[in-house]
Image (cartoon, rainbow over all chains, first blue to last red; front, side):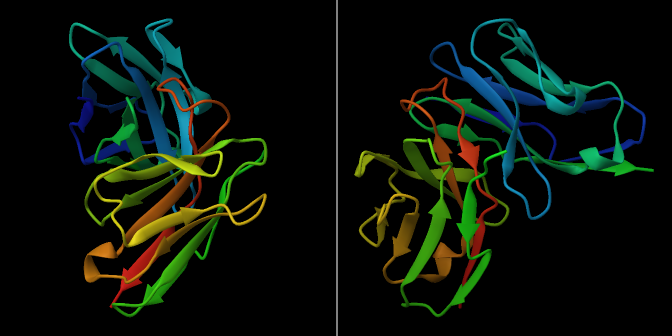
Length: 110
Length: 116
């Protein structure tokens, strides 16, 4: 069975500082992993996805994530937060359906 | 850039009433999905749809739910007799090719349903 755990429900960072949103997955086989972002009143937008190619995946808006099989993790990072990054972030593992984490709300303090 | 759209953005209904949530998937996509998110809980898969048939459904998707592609553009979710516990955000999604774990799904903004 597939599942993801997002370790933080809320993360708050200052503008210009690094962002780390943590995700651990459980999968009975080699997983496909995604990060989606949801801005207020918008749809879920794909940030990046991992599908067993390079373990470091680069996405849009300067985000990247590293797949670590030994740690069953797929943490999302960004070197420098921007005000526009404030949103809800979802980690997803794909199996016979998409399995979502509970989401992490990112606040960026000016 | 093409987007999945959903209407209405908000829907308030009385318990026992029927509601229809509408979605317009991206035009060249062939696979369609509905998910829901009860407030404070995870986004949950409801159903997938391809070639005018349900491909897969979750245990949540019981007989009160149905899906339909009534024309070439719309994809609808009908809840026949709403219950209080159906209050949630409902997301529609679509994907280009075969439903596989590698295929990206594109999501709409959601319809927030409130059942009173």
